[in-house]
Length: 275
Image (cartoon, rainbow, N blue to C red; front, side, top):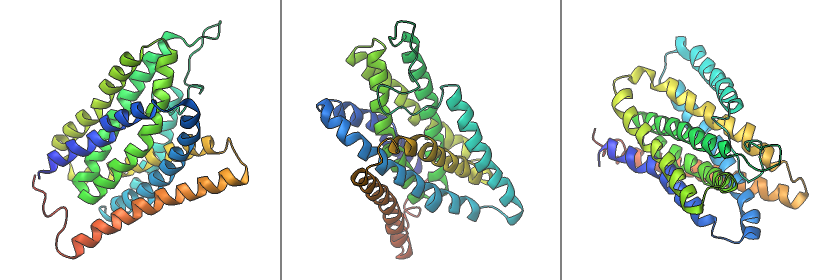
């Protein structure tokens, strides 16, 4: 299987399939969605942090000379600050419900139509960048690309549920909300394919894209997901959250280790992939 085909498949997993999963999730009764969604956010937190610290950052530092390590660390720092600015501009926000700061209200308290436009624009930019980051991970190491795309999918599903809620409250019909969410999700594939042709000739820059991916995942987990989890602090909920965060970490680390084990036995994922 070619590397380009793998990138297309796994950017679709991170983008298009997460939208479909979110749309199916919305078919559940509201009380079930309210109960299940926080569990997904907890799991996504662990998955994102595991991919960032267990996969992306070690691979990035392993690919650069000692003289570039400070520049690589700076990339992570400026990436975090850059995503903060983007979120301030409402181009990189993560709403997991129908009542977050991403809503734009008029003086009567109703969600303004422009909120839906911002959601679609922000999601398209976000998904396009996700595609670039997934492609950069695949061009570095196939197993890293796989776990990166799974982490993207893990946080995109609750994200898309929030997007649906905002679009519906902005006056979009269910079919129209699904159409525009699906349309914006295809930018993940576009970003992945364009990056395959672009980054293939910039191998020396790949570690910096991995660092940017890590800063994206860390920012989402720490600035968006974890504050959501703090809304409930009773012992039972806290233990559930800790358990699911741990499950996300364990799954990503186990998958990464499993792929590494295959490689050590002579069947490297990278070895069976042709450009």
